[in-house]
Image (cartoon, rainbow, N blue to C red; front, side, top):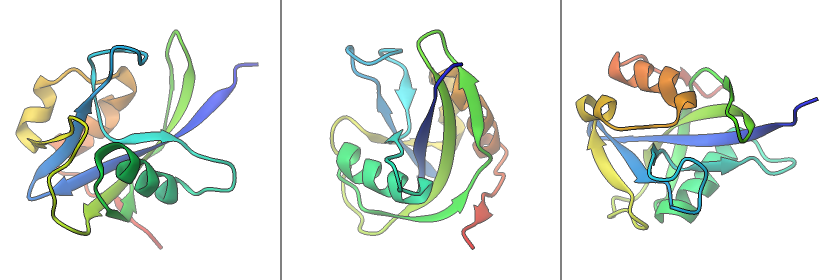
Length: 133
């Protein structure tokens, strides 16, 4: 049986722009664009993991405000369950580590991993996340 990795993805919006980085040459799918995110640790919720990963990867402090649909995707290198968490910035600051703000209407022009297709469609069509609680 294939092990499915639980991944939290922080979908951070600020003034109709979204925080996006570029996957490193040593990562799977190098050069692809990505939202901040990573493995959900044991006992950690998806929103907590998204907040932690945002801080670790971009240096930005965020607050989780909603949830998008969970997506299961099977890549050649791994199977993942992607938990997309809508977030907002707590303190305006310039993102670090190569992350940048990309306008909503520019996201479709970028190359993201295939597992991001559904969230990119939701963003393009301004589909709101389900509120937390």
